[in-house]
Length: 385
Image (cartoon, rainbow, N blue to C red; front, side):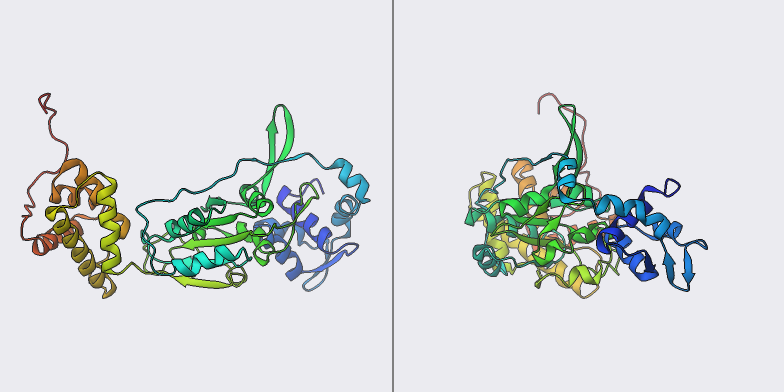
């Protein structure tokens, strides 16, 4: 047992927990236990060897698993006595109502689900910058529901989500993660950018069914409180990104996706809705809605709409998001220059795309001119400015 890697030992512990008193296992059983913990072939392969093989696809793990089983199957009073102290951050998190938010699309349906306090997992997908996360946040804010947001990335694992051992005041304690906190508080748990995850988030399988979770490191069972729900946002539908726009997006396990009750595919808002959003941002940054600002608003909306239609027809590789329009508004409130605001906010695109977008805007807005030789970058500092 000491010769095995820690990950292999964890797999054996999982097998002992799932199958008490069993010592002969099929390959599929071992792999399923390993994958539920986020492990791969390099972790379970050491378990499969000529010494443990009985026949093809079946292994006798009695010499490996008995020491583990002894610990797993101890009398409950001993286990409780051994369990480390669990702690959880007692702070509650509530999103604030944002005056720039405009309700549209699936917001009404999402609000009904949150208001029902029913466990009803939702998967929301759509292109970047169209307000998926903001919509969930504002639904919780308007209903006064506790809202816990977890930003998912390829390194997110069970320790980040469920919790792990931490050193607190010189003592090792089990610190409960955001998932357990949301369960106990009956909060809305937002898994943001869930398609950036790896199979390490398979630890959420049972939780996505609304069931209690056994904290393996302490033996504690955490029950979901009324009102607890999980909402996930993503740029893809969990099948990866074929066009390469979201290179970090992964293919999510089908069993994981199947546990979401409904899926919502969110597009960009209509022109009328987007106009309301943009004007609210002009007000946010202290600008009067005079004729000049309203004209600029209309031009931005039309410009973005043309680019999106061209994008969906495969005419361009980039798109102007609602978030990008709001960034342009903020930049304009600083520099009071339409073309400079647009140029600075689309500078992340390649040169050809940027110049094409700037040129298109001059056709939408006859009051400005685009000079591709103009320098929008930093200039020599003048103390008189």
